[in-house]
Structure formats: structure tokens, C-alpha cells
Length: 211
Image 1 (cartoon, one colour):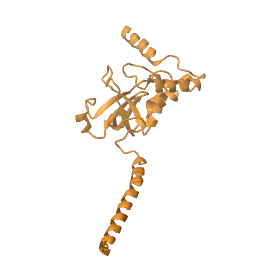
Image 2: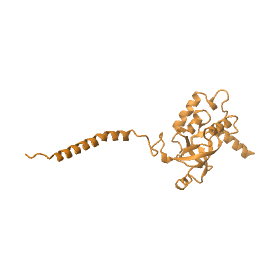
Image 3: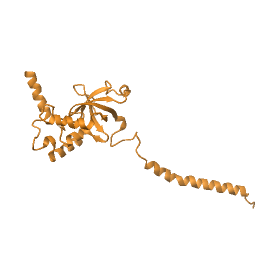
């Protein structure tokens, strides 16, 4: 039987060591892949990044209406929901007291202003893009906070359901239940809101028409 030359033994040993090293690294690589941090393209808090549009809040008109500006004007070319770089936005599922409704209208406006005015927020649309006044309809996020929900949970507004934009109605209703249970804001005992905003608007609209 012929003896294996030393140089072949050496080559065999080197190849075996390299193969072992490569195989031993596979589980470590897979572990790192599985435990990586979410990338910018992945879902954040249940929201898909492709459905979010970043804007800067320029003005707060009242407790549920904003004026915003696109941070990237080129988005308008690829998104039919935007008519211009500046838009008025009505918060979906929220009805804040009117500014003329005693103290609560002003409080709702100041609450929203303090939370988002001058800041960058993200807008998320629902089924219907605009209301009868041409305003964009959106859920507004400040980082991971759903501002629509915060307004209701803290007692500065109530749930206002307008189908087909009802994707978050259950979440908003739970927030309202919390505010009612804790008697916050418009649900408090000391100075509760005398009239729901929609009824207040209807009466004053009819009054203006009669006059």
C-alpha cells in the first residue's frame, strides 16, 4: 500500500479545518438575522411605513383640524391624496367642541396646539380621503402616539364615526370609555360639555340660515 505524501496530508487537514469553521458559523449567522432590529421598511407599531406621510404642522385651527406642509414635495406627484404641498387636515374619528362652545373649544385647541404645532407628524389615511369641505381626513401620529386617540382619552373630544373611515373606531371608543370612567375633561362633573359638537353645529347652522 502506497503512503500518502506529507503535502497531501497537510492539504487535507487545512480543507477539513476550513470546512468545520464555515459550518460552525452558520447557526451564529442565523441567530443574528433572526434577532436584528426592525428596519425602516418594516411595520412600526402596526403601521406600514408606505402608508405614512411625514408632514410639518403649520397651524392648529381648532381641536380637530390642522394645516400641514409636506416635507418632501415630490410625494404629491406619487400620492393622489395631496392636492398641494399645504393641506388642511381633519382628524378622523374625532369631534372636538367648537371654539365658541364655552371653555372646552379653546381647551381642545390649546391641547392639540401644544402637542403638535410646529412639529413633524405622520399622516395615515383611511378609505375616504376627504370630507365635504375638501379637507384631508387622517389619523395623526406623533412618533408612536396616535393623537386622535389622545384627544379622546384625555377628555378633550369625543368619538365621531363617519363610515367608511372606521378602521380604528374600536380603539377610539375604548379611549372614550376611559375618559368617561375617570370623568376627564368634557365628561367631568364640575363643568361638563353641555351639548355635543355635532348638535351644537346643527343648531347654530340652522339659526344662521333663519337669520
